[in-house]
Amino acid sequence: MPFFRDPVHLIPLLFAAAILIGTALLSLPLATVDGERAPFITALFTATSAVAVTGLIVVDTGTYWSMFGQIIILAMFQIGGFGIMTAATVFGLMAGRGFGLRDRMATQVERSLLETGDAASVLKLVFKVTVAVEAVIALVLILRLTIGYDVPLISAAWHGIFHSISAFNNAGFSTYSVSLMGFRSDPLVLGPIMIAIIIAALGFPVMQDLRANRLRWRKWSLHTKMTMMGTVALLVFGFVTTLLMEWTNAATFGPMSVATKVLNAAFHSVMPRTAGFNSIDVGAFRDETLMINYLLMFIGGGSAGTAGGIKITTFMVLFAIVGSEIMGRRDAGLVQRRFSRGIERQALTVSVLASAIIFAATAYIAAVTTLPLEDVLFETISAFATVGMSTGITAKLPPDALTVLALLMFVGRVGTITVATALALGTRGRLFRYPEENPIVG
Image 1 (spheres, helix red, strand yellow):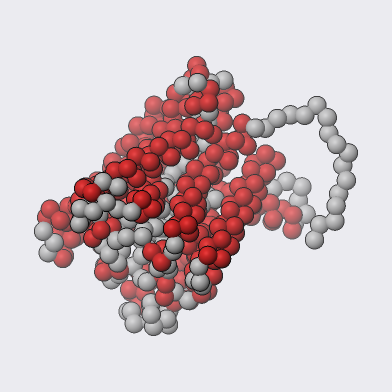
Image 2: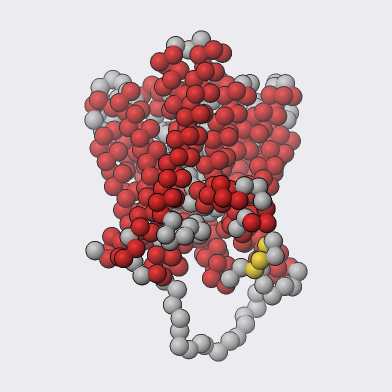
C-alpha cells in the first residue's frame, strides 16, 4: 500500500505502535513493584519517554517499576534509539522496486548520505556499532561497580547493562533514584557514559564515513565535516560556560575540588546533546547556566542517530545563512561548499516550526500551572529535543501538562525526520513565477 510505503507516514506509525505496546505492557500489574496497575498517564508518559529516548520520568524507574517493567523500558529505548528510525530508513531503501528513484532518495531521511544500494551494509553497521559500544561500556561499568563499589555481580551487571544501553541510545533513563549524582567524582563511571553518548550522537552516516575514510579530512563528506566541527564547538562551549558559571555556586560546583569541577563540567556539556543523565542537581543551576542549556538542548546532536534537537547540521546551515547575509555574500555555505536553496529552506522551516511548537507548549503549561517560567521552558525544550534533563518539575505537572509533554516527545522524535522528508517529497516545480517585489525587512 502506498500509504505505508511513504516514510512520512511509516515512521510516525511505527513509533506510535511501539508507544501503545509499551503503554499496554507497563499497565500490567506485573510491571510495578507493588503489583498495582500503574495509572494510564504514568504508563503512557513513561512509554513515550522511553520510545522517544528522552528520559523524563514521573516515577522513579528503579523503585516504582519491577524488573519486568524495567526490562520493558530498556527494550523500548533500545527500539526507539536505533530500531525504528534506522529500520524505517533502511527498509525504505531496500524496497527498491516499490519506490521510484526520487522516492528512494527522499527516504534517506535527515540527509543520511547513504547509497541506495547500500541498505544491507548500513543495517550491519548499525547493528555492529550498537552491539560493540554497548557491550564495551557495559563491561567497563560492571567492572567498576563490582571492584570499586563492592556491588554484587548480578546487580552490577544489570545496572551496567541498563546504563550502557541507555547512554548509547541517548535515553537518559537510570536505575538510580538520583541518576548519576552518586558518581559525580568518578571518571570511570561518567567517562564511559560520556563516550557512548558522543559516539551515538554523531549519527550513523558520520560513523560510516569515518569507517571508510578514517581521519582523512579532505575525503569526508560535507555532512561529516559539519557534524564533527559542530560537535567539538558545542562540547567546548558547553564545558567552558558551565564551568565558569557554576564555579562558585554552593549548590553545585562550589564545594568540589578543581578536578571534580572539570569532570562535571565536561559531563554536563555532553548531557544537553539529548542524553539526560545528571551528576549534579539541574534544578540548582544558575539561571544563566539554564539559558545555555536551552540552546544546547535545542540544537541537539547529529542527524540519523539517536540524538534529538533540530540537529547540528540544521543549526550550522542557519549560522552560515546569517554569516553570508552579514558579509554580503550571495550564497551561503561552509568549507568551500555552498548550500542549495532547498536545504536552506528546510533548515529554516524545521527551526521555525520547532520554535513555534516549544513556544505553544510552554505557554500552555505555564497557564495551567504556577511553576516558574524558566523551569517550564527548560522542561518543554528538554521534551521536544528528547533530552530528558529536568529541573525537577515533571512529577509536579497535572495530567494535561504531562500529555502535552508526551506529545512534544513524540513530535520531537519523529518531527524533524518527517518534516525534512515531507519537504523533500513535496518539492514541486511551477510552470510560472509571480512578479518579484521586496518588502521592508527589519
